[in-house]
Length: 243
Image 1 (cartoon, rainbow, N blue to C red):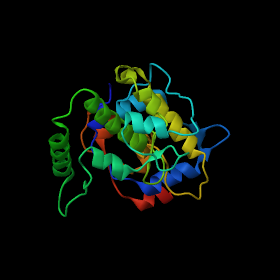
Image 2 (cartoon, one colour; image 1 turned 135 degrees about the horizontal axis):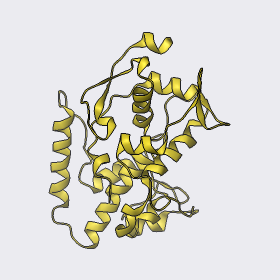
Image 3 (cartoon, rainbow, N blue to C red; image 1 turned 90 degrees about the horizontal axis):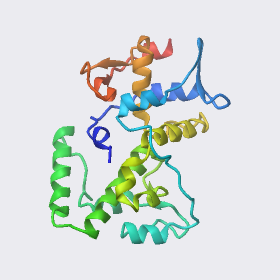
């Protein structure tokens, strides 16, 4: 389906100060960041190089329904948060995939955590086949898309893209990378008083590391790695941000 490179991305420590500084420079009229030397924006090429998601193909768009209850029950076997809501509880999704207690243990590294998570999920899903396997795959995809690619603030997971997952054979034909960028732009237009950004914030973070190296916010940890998000790690330096 084309999510392989994206799902293999390593964890990137959030550079909250940098993200907030970028958000304060967002020009809602031009839909671009306003710097002393002019406007700059992440482009589709940046999305591909940083995340590995495709930006060509079918447009990620759908009909907005008043209620998603029927679709969530039929395709996911779960319940929506409310009759007119498009949100599913994250904990319910995790429980359905066998990772309800997916929390870091004291002193546990990211690699060990992911290995344990994978082992727990496989133990639950190994016997699934047919319609049950398709249902579990949709649950996993809605968790990835609703929390990472088209993520919103808060704990619940959005399921408005669920109609696109009904035919699993066509999921890989959509331009999820372009949708990620559009969703990020849309959320940058919110009030600057709100801290953080809904959506896949590491895109902005690595974009700034790559195109604004003089900030000194990120350092290369693996040169030549693709996607580019694999190349960088956060280097805390408050002085350069104030400058």
